[in-house]
Image (cartoon, rainbow, N blue to C red; front, side, top):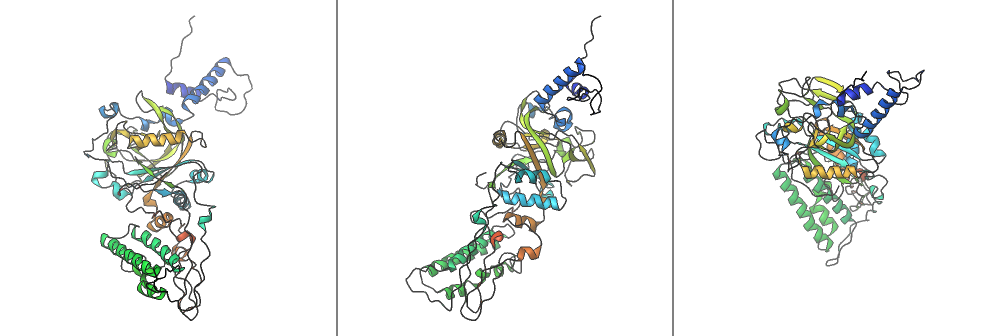
Length: 507
């Protein structure tokens, strides 16, 4: 009698073989050792299953994720940027570089506040492995009609062994200079090399950070710029001995306090956040304060332009999943770098979701973003991979590219990202993707993180210890302590994340 051959689809084969325990050959889900030898059929099934795993990985998303199936529209087949949303140009994403120290501070804050589970990404960074960070733009950006279906988010690739600034000697500033005793008269025509220049340089750096922090109007920004120019002009007079230190201090009293500049400009009205005051010196002329070293923020990382959300405009009324269009919720997800297909025959290397995730699903018929937190939440394998959109130019609208996947807009950026991941030997093809939402981070926490400070409340952020003023009537204002000073070549800012011009910098 001719043996009947059973023909299975790929999914049917994987489902059938999952009942076979590779190590034991058991045909049940019992993980205990069977009381009989492994049959020939079970041995062949185990070997075949291991081969399949070796090719595709032990990844549920590959075998059953309906969200990862890109619809084969004309644009997709021809790899043309999709323009179905009616927009004619890409979203102008602010390419804000972030330091590794800033990223670690933000992840620790979100973990502490229960805004997602970031234990894995925090551990990976601590153990010097590469981590991928997705940053979801604020909801008010996405809710704008023109942005409903555009690539508005960012992705940062933090390479293995990236420096976070810890253990660097530059993190601790030198000991402040001793304040001078009594009044000091400058010799006319002789170049001055006073300790006061250290204070001036530090204060200029603070002023530059304040002016570029993104919380000012155009006029306020111009006022700060004029003040900075005046400071530099009087600094030159002091350096050349044309004015005395006392005269400089009298002319620029508000500058040395910085807080007075902030008053009336919408900043910290006490001025303490940016310019803590040093201790008061004993009677006599004004004493000076020593400079403080700038904090080492670690390596700087530039972002790529992506989407972290699905196209509700495209899939809202016809979702791929009968439960509704999905959105990846904040937190860590494990990914593997391997070749996979997305609905069509073309296979290429991408980040494939390798674990169940927390996903929210919008009711069928919802076509606009009013929230990032739909009522229906699940933990499931969705196949929400990290992949490219078109292979030609820059994607304008999300459209058919994403039903929940994390998708790159620019093919050149995608190639750069995948090249870095491929060459990352420390990770062995396995990566943690940490997705954060800017709406989960208060303004004061973000501002502190951008200058390398972990926000612990107003008092802790305000407090700083300055150098002791010398014998003088009043000790001059102390510069901020190590962790509150800014990195001289980086005025960290997220002025309006997703809206500024590109900035130069190295990954």
